[in-house]
Length: 525
Image (cartoon, rainbow, N blue to C red):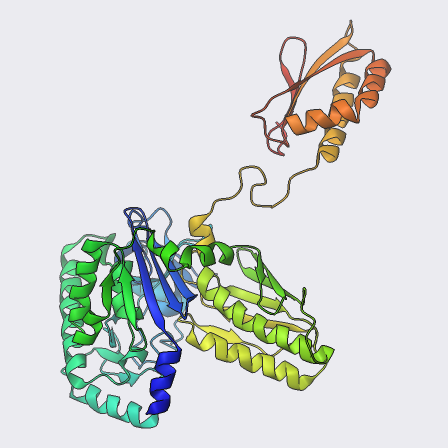
């Protein structure tokens, strides 16, 4: 008992909620360190978890998928094996359902779901990049402690993350006594561990109320239409984040404070008591040190306490993480120093994946370790670090090349994609051409234009429009080359600098102002 008390006191967990008209942000802070972060824009519709009554647009047998019109700009992608609800049972994990999928023929799909037919689907992954949302016909309605599966017959299960055998048995007994409608399955969520039967009954009533409204919407609304919307981030804080180990929730908006207390009051008195209204003068994220930490989290280079650092590069499908020793030297042997940096690195990588909400294939280039024992230590450390992640993860042992590969479920755009746009200069590349490279390009095109115009009577007169940085290069370092070019082609060149011109853009005009050649942001015109 005393060990439990000491553990609770030594690890203080708080949820900091910043509510503004255009943005809502939530951070889980553990002993002053941000461990989880989410952002939502109220003006933009959240799709993941929403249920739609859609219409089949077309079937693609080669892809084994259907495209469904759910009322968005892009049609939703639906795998054939997700079109027929799984009625044989559930995987006992709220995040890993329908592990056993039925094989279904193309002819059967075409017969049951011809183009134009209606289907009820739930969004499992929002639009990412150029891809539309991904949907499934296996619906789920999450509550505080339970997840209801309308198509899973009468299956009753417990999340695999609840490992204690006695607790699992207790929860299964409670599930057997719950009054479920016929043909409906139910799963106890991880947060349900320790909850009493009364709490489960209350949660089930709330879910059934939502299910009743959803069924009415399916009957009355014409496709395509949204028949169920996930609650906003403020309410999801209570449903998904407010666990027993949270010491308090601090929120800076009075209206949202009242709403979140009302929602929490349906759970327990204790949940209601931990919610506080922030009344400080500084912005709430500044007061609790969240703002500074989040600014650092989005940098390409992430420093480690040991003196080492990570370099994180995010692409559409792959995340590359490079681990470097940096200034770290260590007090023991070189192998021990490398182990120390790698150990800290994998814990920080797991944290960064959660904070940035990035996923797909993740490749971590660790510092080379010769000892197989050390490699296994790092592998086990990463497995332990990702256990607290809400997204599904799969970690592979370190390869012979010293690489650790893992996957992380990706449901929505990363925070980087939500909060940043491509640089208007580099267009997301991170680099632009140097003045030297641009000078070479400009001289090459001037020579081509002057050669072409040599056959015309009279001297060739050209005006070249460039950016200031390129003009400086042409004037100070390449002037003699341009003078020689004029002499060689019997022409006349004038240059004009335009402050608003993109560094990689330039134009070549004749004496009448007609554009003979132009490059606009590294694209020829």
